[in-house]
Image 1 (tube, rainbow, N blue to C red):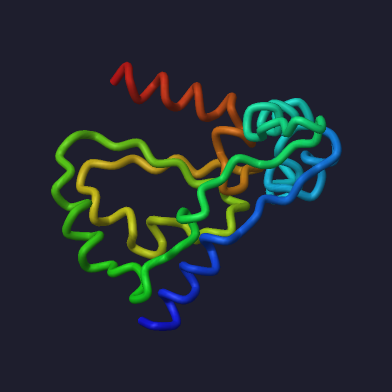
Image 2: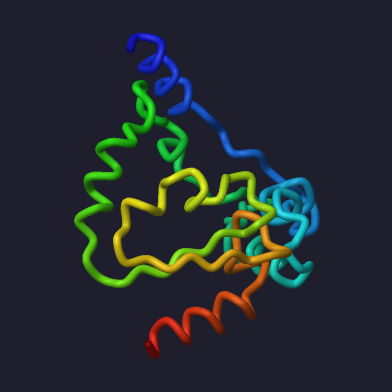
Length: 146
């Protein structure tokens, strides 16, 4: 626990990296590299709206230092399953087949949600809504109409 608290304190002091221009901010960042499926125009949009301009014209990515402060005991899956098991409405799930996360039905995460439908999306990574917006919008419209 002490090590975790010290880690959180280090996170508090994290300074955002500054980029000289929008192109530099979009290259080698989450908008430009973590998903090779993101189109250039989408990466530019994410960069424009995911950064703040500094007074010198450079940019920094918006972020919350505490968003990466994971709990010291990990994710308790039994608690998560109990909470997800209480969902009674229909749920639409998407999984990019090129995601770093495993298939949520294959590993059992989706099973806790009784009334779910999973859309497996080829050619998409973790950000299906960015990587394959066409599929995301079509499937969402069908789901909402049903």
